[in-house]
Image 1: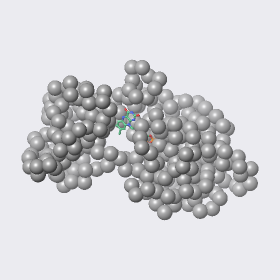
Image 2: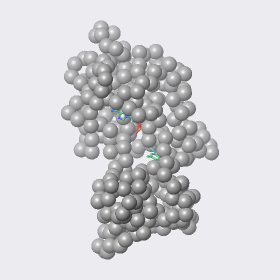
Image 3: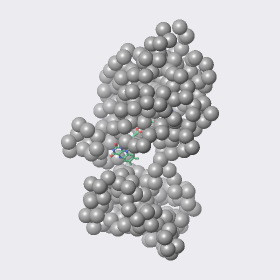
Length: 308
Ligand code: FAD
């Protein structure tokens, strides 16, 4: 039997990593979960999750993941602070390099999730934290009585725009198409919210201001018409980018950088599995992340058992 620090190292303590940890701890694997910031992942910033089963009235993202974390820790999952910078999966022992140490494992589950995609327009980076935000729960209350813009057309953009409407005087929801992608129930709510005004077929071309956001340059992609939208906040929800930089050239990624997995969440490297938002999947939600993670943990357990 090859020697290694752990049977399984889980990278990331969002919903996927914590769920994988619950299964691995119950399987009595020697497991460690590494998290580079704080446990919880992206759902921490969601004010209200109503599509995760088991909570009839909905639940805040922070409360939902704190339940997951408590459950995982009670079952014996150690969660340590650590940012995995490099991975060496070439040999039978997988090696993960943090800034201060290297950890070896017989198997690895990558559950590193994703980060918000930027608009990549002039002014966006300059005004980040000065009107540009990716988090309504964190920053929405600062815009009480003011006009703000939200960019995007999916579930997150619409759900978060509804949250912003609690504080803002007006929310312009800017979408590059003429119809939203969000779930029908969210679209109905957005239509019924008088503070939300749709800006269809439009993209933001620049964020403008002196010390903070004062307006957005917006272009209609059908007519080419441009206008300045006077707002003090610009909330961006235009998709996600996978947190997989450290895996480039190590496991197979798709063109967008998402990890290519099989039905058992196996990657191109034996003993390395992936779960949640970091993998190539048609739906990035808590329910899918935890489902992936349960399968990945079972696969890792079977893989490690096959080594003995
Ligand atoms: P993540 O939640 O992204 O967690 C990954 C974790 O890995 C993070 O904690 C990160 O810090 C850590 N990590 C990353 N790289 C490293 C590294 N190199 N080393 C160590 N740790 C690392 N989903 C729903 O089902 N319902 C909703 O209502 C909903 N609302 C949302 C609202 C918002 C505003 C957002 C942003 C997302 C929402 N989602 C919702 C989506 C949901 O949050 C994600 O699908 C889910 O969090 C994915 O879980 P994950 O564990 O795969 O990844």
